[in-house]
Image (cartoon, rainbow, N blue to C red):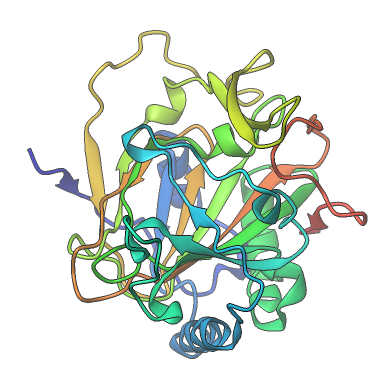
Length: 313
């Protein structure tokens, strides 16, 4: 059964400098996500897209470890090598698994068509992405969401390449960016139109109120690499409204959006995207915000730079 198609949030998307409207905040709290059309103007959106394409052209394959990023679909292990684990204060390039010949290991696509994502410090090291992250508009949204000390801890461009862009199974962002209590919110910005054909997001409406964060993505205690561990701390954000009865079979609502759209995603919300089998890419920029005074420990795969995670205000 195909997922239903979502409607956009109430009110205009432009002029978000003053944060969310009461209607938008209510929609976010009820659904666990909020779609804000035209949050970025066409000029800024085009500039970020071009900057992404320039980065893909500029990066060198010389001495690159050819690290592939796996979403863990089909029981495949998540990425966990040193190139990945030390990327928190760098801009690094991670390959799509299907960009390689499985028998020879040779790259089947030109490098600019082979990258899964670029991460994880664009918001600090790249001026264009820094300006679109650490700004008054996003600070106002964080205030609307009642953040006390919002910190941007990672940023990525996810490319969802034509023909090979991998499927991302249902997941919760707080699994990968765990704080105690959970506090992550994703700011997801479409740099190109995201459609059913090229792998747009789908959301399990309201699942943030009934789906605890039961596991977290962590560094292994010994031997290097990563693994999933049981959550021993809080499984829902502080002061959250929790539904006691869990829904077994989630229904996913498809979120097709135009370039320039911002989607806010609650850290407990189940969401996913399908493989991109079309001839069109689906480039997006995303960054995540956590509460600065929540516990963030040394087991998390992503560790803060020496200066700490970036303050939004």
